[in-house]
Image 1 (cartoon, rainbow, N blue to C red):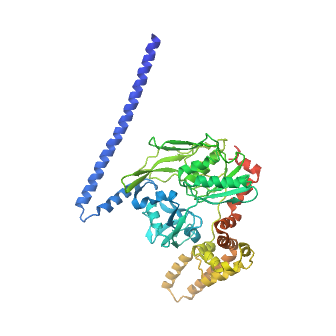
Image 2: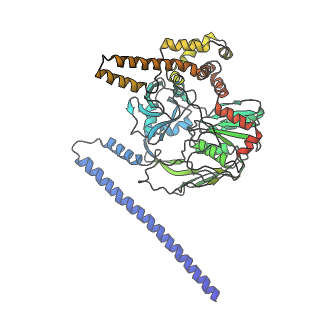
Image 3: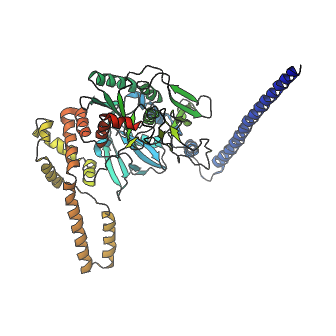
Length: 551
C-alpha cells in the first residue's frame, strides 16, 4: 500500500511538472505574441503619421519597399526582401545560364566582396580575383546595397556592359573593370581528367541539381582509367544546393553515417542528414579536397564533413565561413522574404559560419562558443568558422604587371593577334621568342603599371610645385624619383617572366584546346595541386595526416 501511495505521489509530481512546463511554454509564447502585437501597432502608427503628415508627398510604394529593406538589413547579409525581378537569383542554380559577367559575390565585414570569379567568364578573363571589394557598380556606390541589389545590377543582357570599381588589398588606387556581359553557361564539373597514371582530378565550380550526376560520371570515368587517388578541387566554389552536397558526400562516405545537421528555432529548421547510399568510391581510394577563401557554403559542408570523417586530406587555405541556411517565404505573387532560419553543423559539431555577421546588440545568438572538436578517428580539428585545411598551402599573389595585363586584356588580345602564327599549342610552348614578342607588344600598346605609392607621389609633387615651381632642388628630386619608378617598372617584366609565360600559355591553350587545354596548362604549375599530388603519392605522408598525434 505504501508502494502504491509513493507511485501515486510520483505520478502527481510528474503531472504537476508537466503542467508547469506547459504553462511556462504557453506563457512564453503568449509573451512573444504580445510583444509582436505591441511592436506592430507602434510600426503602423509611425508609418501612418509619416505618410499623412509629412510636409511633402511620399511615394508610398517606394517608401514601403525602403522601410522593409531597412528592417531586414539590420539582420544578417543573407536575409533579404525580394520582388519579382529580384527573385531570378533563386532560379540560377536550375536555369543553366544567365546574362552576366560570371562573378560570385558575398559580404565580408559589411563590404561587397568577390567570393570567386567563375571559370572562363568575362570576370575571370579580366583578372578579377577572390577577395576583391566592389565599391561601385556603374559608378553607383555599393555601400548601402544588399547582395541581391548588387547582383541585379551586375547581371544583364548578353553584349551589354557593366563597370565595376574594385578595391584590392595591396593596391593604393581603385581598379576599374568594364566588362561585357555574356551568357554564363554553368557547368558544374568544369574539368575532369588524369594528372598522371594514378591520380585523377575533378574541378567542381558550384552545387546545382546537376552536380551529383556530373560528379558521378566524372568519378566513374577516372576510376575506369585506373585512378588510385582523386583530387576534388573546390577552390573558389561558392556553394549552392544543400541536397547536391549531400548527394556528393554519399559517393564517398559509408552508408548510415551522420553528414550534417541544421539547427534553428523552429521544428522545420532542425534537420539531420545521414548517408543513405553505398559509396561509389572505394574505401581504400585516397582523396584530397582543395579549398581556399572562395570556398563557401556547400563546399565547406563537403570539405568539413570529409575532414570530420577522416575520409580526405584537406589542402589549401581556410574557407570563407558561410554556414547559414535560408528559407524563402512567399508574401504574395510578386514578393518574397528570404530569411536565415538555421545554421549548418558538420559531424564533429563545428559551426561553419564565421562570427561577426550580425549586430550582437540586436540579435541574441544562442550558439555556444566553439571549443575542442575531434574527427571520428580522434584528431583535433579547429572550430571558429570556416574549414581550416589539414595542410596549408597559400596560393601565390598575382604580381603587378601580370595583374595589369589580365585587367587590360593584354594576354587575350596578344593571343588573338598571334593565333595563326602557330600550328599548335606545343609550337607556342617551344617558341623561345614568345616573351620577347610579348614585351614588344606591351610597349606598342603602352600598357601602364601603377606601382604602390605612385598616386601619393603625384599628389605630393603637385602640392610641392604649387609652393615653388621654380625650385631646382625639387626638379632634381622629382627626376630622381621618376627615374627610380621607371627603372622599377621596367624590371617587372624580367621578375615576372614565369607568371607572364604561364598566362600566355593559358590563353593559347584556350584557343587550341578549349577549356580543357587551359586547365592542363594551369594545373601543371599549380602549387596547391602539386602539393596534393605529392601527399597522395606518399603513403606515409598521407597516413600521417590522419594520425591522432598530428595536431
